[in-house]
Length: 115
Image 1 (cartoon, rainbow, N blue to C red):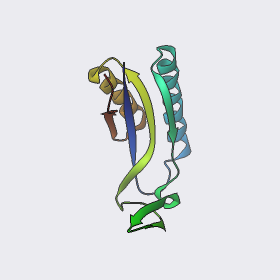
Image 2: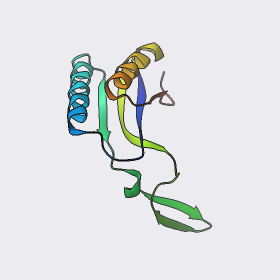
Image 3: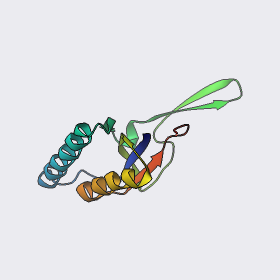
Image 4: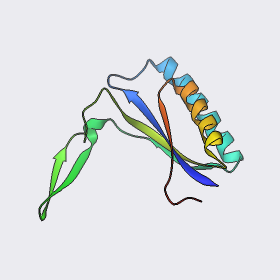
């Protein structure tokens, strides 16, 4: 089985209202339980906002450290899940479920080196 990264992109701005967010979290919990029950769950977690990021970059022999996101944008990586799936179609189906549950864009990508 291959491993896939499901990246969840959220728009800049405040959090959704608590009632909506509670429903999303319930749906995400149900998806996770199903992934665990099928042996497809590897890892997943939400991330703090891009303002909490620290970027390290090489410049000659030095490593420069800067606060803030690597890229400025209207959307940012808000969380991710790693799953195992027999093929891309199965991974896309899990991604579709995450997209419906969160109403966010979900990017599905296979890891390199997987058979």
